[in-house]
Image (tube, one colour):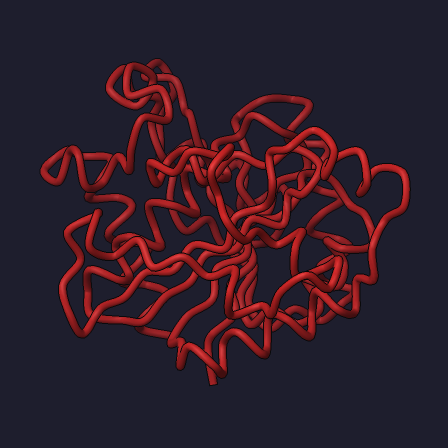
Length: 252
């Protein structure tokens, strides 16, 4: 059975999708069969990190939710273009960037139970070791379903007062849903901050383990979502931190 990992943040702009993409790539490079699914249907974008043109995506998660294809047909194998060799495989399930599809979601919604059934089906059909869910920021019905079926929840936050408050709500909700394992990831930490102090303060605030404190880096900013950071900069200190988190997910 695949290990389901939700990567979530209360607010946008935390680097959640970059975290999802980098962890997925590193896990697949380690020899695992991995899929990452973009459930931020209202504002999708992770496909850009994988070099996919949103205008030419043949099957998206939206097509599955509207009954136009199977969930397996939405899974795009991006392994070769990323240089991931067998036995590792990486699949991306993107959401549509087409304006009409987004408007449909906003106006009509969709059957959330169909989404969660799709998680299990694609994990089985693709024989996945790990399924990473890149969630929609904040808390709504689809997020709650995603958290409820997850084996691990990674909450991404920045060392910012608004993030501190929102993360507290997310942690409280996750505990009420009995998510088996929850980790915090502090991202975009300014160089002026002491990482050990940030870790200690965040762990004290939420009584929850901080898996990593990731620094703000100019290289990530200049990459500007033009690829997977860990693959472009394999020897960068930030990549080492991503790799440590990936190894942590594999070990437990």
